[in-house]
Structure formats: C-alpha cells, structure tokens
Image 1 (tube, rainbow, N blue to C red):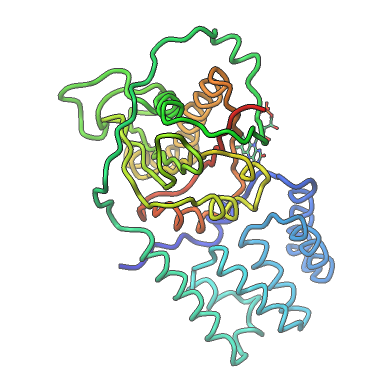
Image 2: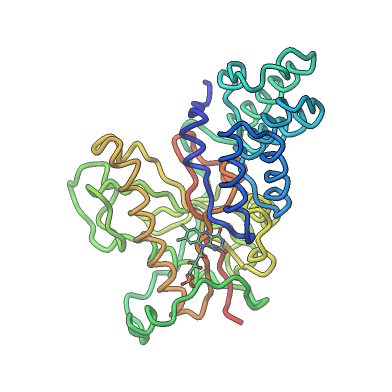
Length: 343
Ligand SMILES: Cc1cc2nc3c(=O)[nH]c(=O)nc-3n(C[C@H](O)[C@H](O)[C@H](O)COP(=O)(O)O)c2cc1C
C-alpha cells in the first residue's frame, strides 16, 4: 500500500524547525520572501548561506531548485531536487505539477527524479510497517515513586544540556525517565480501549494518549544497544532493532553536537489520528503538541533529579527518523531528547 504523502504546503509547516545554527531561521525567512517576490538570484544566494549552516528542510532544497530553474542553472536545479527528495519531498503529484519546475521537467533527466521518489517511497514502506509486529520484550526495573529532590529544585535548575560526561546510563535510569515521561500512574479497568491501560504521568487531551516513545540505547548498562519502543501498559520495552544507531540519530538531527556524548536518546512520535478522531483540526494544531510538551517537561525534571542532562530537539529530518525508528505509517516524529550524565 502506498504511503500517504501530505501536501507540500502542510509539510512545509510541519517541517519548520527550531534554529540550531545561528542564522539559519533568519536566512530561510529572507530566502522565502525573495522566492515570493520572484527574486531568484537573491533567493538562491540566501539558501546557499542557510544550507551552509548544516541545517535544512526539504522545502529549502525544493525552493533552491525552483530558483535554479528560473535562472536556467539546470545542473544545480537537479542537484537540489535530488537533495529535496532524499530529505523527504516524496509528493510525485506535486512535483509533476509545480509550474516553477517546468524547465526541469522538459529535460530528459526528469524521469530519474521521479524514480528517486519511488525508491524513497519503497524504502519508507519497507522500513515503516502498516502495523507493528510484536518483538522481543525487555523488562525494566520498577521506577521509584518517591525522591529526595523537590519539584521546586528541579524547576529552578532544569536546563537544556547539550554535552555530557562519557559515562553510561543504566537501565534503571532509562526506566525512571520513561516512567516520568509516560508511565501509567492509575490503572483503569474497563476504560475505553483508546486509553490503553490508564492515566499517565502526563495529561492528555481527551485521554487519547497519542504519543509513542522510543529509546535509542547507545551506552546503557543492562540494555544492549538498539532501538526500543516503550510500552506504558506493562512498563516494558519492545525491541525494534538491534545495534548502536548513534550515527543515524545524529545524522537525522543535522549532526547536532549532543550526540557525540549522549548515552541514549528518547524519541517521540505521535499518532495524530488518535486525537483528531475526536477533536479534528484542533487536535492536530494544538492538542497533540501540548501533550508532547507535558511529557517532555517531565523528562527534563526527572532527568535533573538523576543528574542526567537532556535537551528537547525539534530540528531533524522527519523521513530519516521515521526510517531509523521503523515508525508505523500513522506516526509522525516530534522530538528527540538526547540523554547523558551531567559533566
Ligand atoms: C520545540 C523546541 C525545539 C527545540 N529544538 C532544539 C534543537 O533542535 N536543538 C537544540 O539544541 N535545542 C533545541 N531546543 C531547546 C531550546 O533551545 C532551549 O529550551 C532554550 O534555549 C531555552 O533553554 P533552557 O531549556 O535551558 O531553558 C528546543 C526547544 C523547544 C521547546
């Protein structure tokens, strides 16, 4: 079955990222206004500068290709288009109708761009299952329900930390952090199935609990390197894939320096449908990301009490994370939170 590809416009909004390299956001904003004004040379120069920061979205590559097309810089135009496809521009219909790409479409190399889209879609379909098959389950030690550090101290001292000591975390740390993020704190017998077990540490609009949490273990004592899905209902992990995926996660997040020393990373995705089925667009535009914020703040606060550093990361390439974490097709990645002992 074909992966549903959202329209370029929706994806443009969804893929906008928080700046990690100084100037990227400002440069892209200026470049977009030049595109809108059809000032192609100025737009291209700004995109070149923005992309030189190391951050990108496929929209940037697409717009740079558009500018090249209008300037008659055909080779560069194709080169940017391939980069856009590789970064997640997989809407063949949109590509085939885009009037700004006309000159590229008339060339004999156009079919190769469409083939590249097909290859990416096939790879995505292979990597991202329609439904999740059960995998081997890993027990987590029970989380602590009490501690010595006050909420006030955690609130006062929490910071986004981007560099960590070269020490491993333990499976007990992972257990505690995942419980804080989305652990079940009140079992509800006979509740509607969408609640999936009970109320959790984080509130959720309509108790729809749209979030999925993964842990990528790079260096965790008691947990072999790999990618695991957190199962709140049982407080267990399910193995998604074995092996150290530090390089893949880092690359997806534009090689932000955090991953040089992180021992693990929590990755959030959401099944928006769980919330939109009840709340429609309001669920998409507001509630799911509000749910995410509640849960991620719990991770920040709990991490501080464990002397573990973390940082919410919103800047990454969706497509690459989806493939690395083998997310189901209904999931959209939202946050990456690297974890490591404070230095
Ligand atoms: C939605 C969102 C996205 C973020 N994305 C990134 C990111 O990609 N990289 C990064 O280093 N920090 C990222 N941050 C962290 C912010 O830069 C950080 O929260 C801010 O500078 C305030 O610092 P503090 O968290 O230490 O108070 C993000 C924060 C939020 C809320």
